[in-house]
Amino acid sequence: MAKKIKLAKRVKRLKKVCRLECGMPLSFRMKLLGTETAFDVLVRAKELERQGKNVIHLEIGEPDFDTPQNIKEAAKKALDEGWTHYGPSQGLPELRELIAKKAGELRGMEFKSEEVVITPGAKPVMSFAIMALVEDGDEVLYVNPGFPIYESMINFMGGKAIPLALKEENDFLPDLKELKRKLNKKTKLLIINFPHNPCGSMPDENYFRDMAEILVKYDDLWVLSDEVYSRIIYDEKFISIASFPGMKEKTIILDGFSKTYAMTGWRIGYGIMHPELAKELARIETNINSCTTTFIQRACLEALSGPQDEVDKMVNEFKKRRDIIFEGLNEIPGFSVKVKPKGAFYIFANVKNSGYSCKELADKLLNELGVACLSGTCFGKYGEGFIRFSYANSIENIKEALRRIKEFMSKKK
Image (cartoon, rainbow, N blue to C red; front, side, top):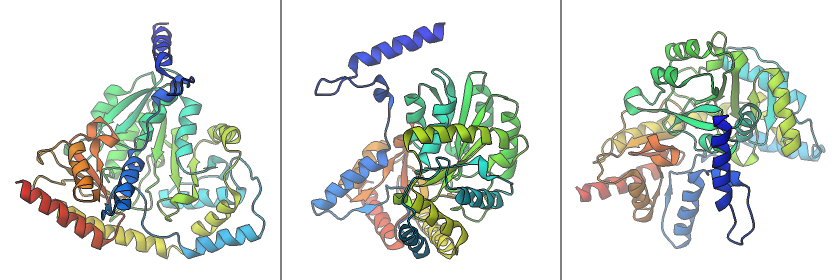
């Protein structure tokens, strides 16, 4: 009863201020909705470019490679063949079957097509899962710093967002003691993300095993494992929490094509989960999107079954860039990077000794130097004191950005 009264007061308070500037009312939930700051910074950076400033883009989480030609040709062929109509809400059966096969091979597991839901981008898997599982006031644990839409969607759906702090001294991995303390009967969902954005961290097998032993004790707990960078990993084998005893049944795997195949604008992703939950997410898909674009799904058949050379080249190039930016940032006064990224294409630099807050420094780097990046607080309160750089840009541009920053910080000292 107390929880309902508290929620009712919160709703009443929000409704008082929830109007557009034109005076028309707006749903109170819109006050709870956050944003993805990378796009805001991109807009500012583009405006500076329009004014004639040379800007190096290290802010946006997007591969700077083109979609492989064989995938584009497959999309053109699908259009010519008439794949322009509705498809099943859960996704084309042939693509779901292939995703189950390939995702299983990567993770050393077995999946079935009925466990797969295909969505317009990977974000809907997260949003639909929260929508399907979280009641008003339910607690959702999520990694912080982390992808900002986690917290945004938890709040929007009426859940209570409980952060799990990722600290540099713990290699940007959740403290399992803190996880134990924060898990309780009210916890409905845990959101994790490895390889991690913004930190590039990735646990080893022993860590995952220890985490799984904690999680399996909670019968009603679901785990949303954001594995969208599963193919962009360096030196190590990818591991999913779902592969550990007792975890497959309670894990929702989120993955997609945007990062692996440089298909960010194509908007297609997928979730793998218990088949009963997959049916529920497909019902939400029916209500919101009807289905995922059919000719794009046909192109994704080629993405998964065709040659993977371009993916391998891209990952090898990211690894070279990672090494350059890791070494370069550690040579800049006031900057340090202790955790070398193991995956994804981001690096989280400690700037606590720079003399600026991370937000102030990120603004200076953009406005004065033309280096676009994101303050750590864009990813949550535990990102204070850090800046995220995306190394999804050329080695030439990365070196130039490092030169500008080093020159700026050296003069400051």
